[in-house]
Length: 180
Image (cartoon, rainbow, N blue to C red; front, side, top):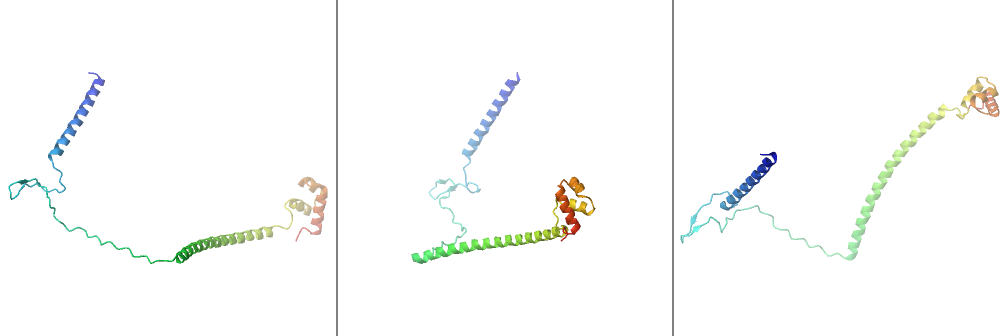
């Protein structure tokens, strides 16, 4: 027997077993009546001698949960079209006022944040202003060299500026005009 034949035999056996189980389930379902209660079936004989099949034609009344009686809707008083229009406008205005209040609170928060930022920038500006001596950063090195006593030609060659600019830096360093 080959492997293929064994597999087919196994498939046939599985299908046969599934069919057998289905048939058994159908037979058991026919024999057992479905009853809502788990009470055993009882045979009752009526006064005229007929057997009862156990079906209760007059079920017992058991007290169940009591639901409150339905509430009758309250009559809505008649309104004039003007009062209805006024109420709609009032609702609209209330909603608009709430939105405006939210906007104002957001703007106050932004203003506070901007004031803090401006205060920080002022502090930075004051710190930067205290460190600067009023000289352009482009000419700070040439001013330092002029205060050391170098000539205009040496300053011009070292700093990459013209001789006229170097002479101006020398005159500013000599007169003290660079200091404020």
